[in-house]
Image (cartoon, rainbow, N blue to C red; front, side):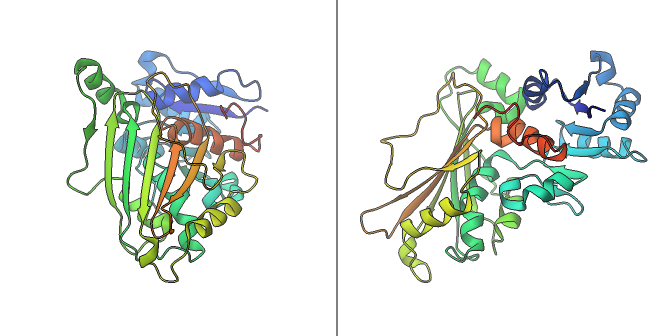
Length: 309
């Protein structure tokens, strides 16, 4: 019997992209609600109970409500909101870090945030291997396409056509910080400086590190070798060759959907400083693509099925 999949919040940006990735999949069935039924708790509750796996593309409170509506069922969940990312009983949906089998077996999976995906991919393996200290004062400079802010931010960019960049998070309390600290195993949350540009999709996450001040003074080559080994064989996460620095990184307004994650290590001439940079699509591995990857694992399908890589 084919798995029954329900996307709760299918009309939102993340939900639309998940549906696009799954619509042509013959090995599963999508439960589709009418526009009126999408607003009905009764209809949603019935769909949640009927589903083998429900993918929640909702605001945090609505995601918690959806889980409550499914009480008494055996439905499994992938939550794309930030409601359950550090919650007890939920598996963090980053299989390259948490383990593919852990995600495959989980009933409750929480999709990583887009910015944390880049940060954790770079930092978590290096902290785990002892090359970077857990108590280092990490900072994160990141820029994203506006789709990560949902319909409201998309509309603001459409209305205010002269905006070149929006820097935000000035209160230093961004909702992504708990998962960054938790899954990298850090003593302190990083200083996070996010910004948004007038491009639909795309993301760069930049973590500067003063190597000369670290215990043991690891070289940039050490970091690159460790990351390359950690992600060896991954069909989704790649590590660019060391020393292959592009002249610049670009985010393009018309970029196509992409579900990969590309990591870079750059250094100065004496390897006293390094920049760790992750390039991804905030709607791909940063949201919809990650949800589909987890779904594939939970259903024991090919991990990369319907992903753009």
